[in-house]
Amino acid sequence: MNSEKIRQIITGCLNEMYEASEPSITWKEIEKKYEGVDNWFWNHEITEAKYDEIRDKYRKLLPTYYRGSLDFDLLNYAPKFKKEK
Image (cartoon, rainbow, N blue to C red):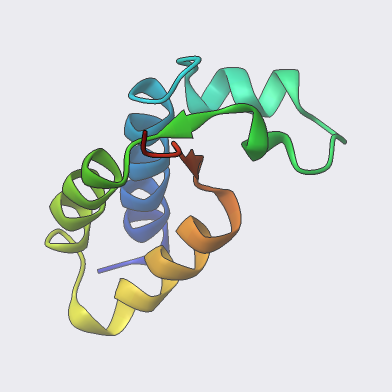
């Protein structure tokens, strides 16, 4: 699997997470709206269950060796978890 395909899978995962977050936004919109802004991911929340569902779906698309790249990007760029009530 080439690096471009890996990047597409990771970007697809982040896009789906942000579309499922509140407020909803696409990854392309994030790139435009938050350019040069720190900690922008704190503006969006996702349930832990939805995060796990989306992450697991995309992890299956990657060879084992590249799953750490997905985990790294999610750690740095995924929306924060909603606080449970």
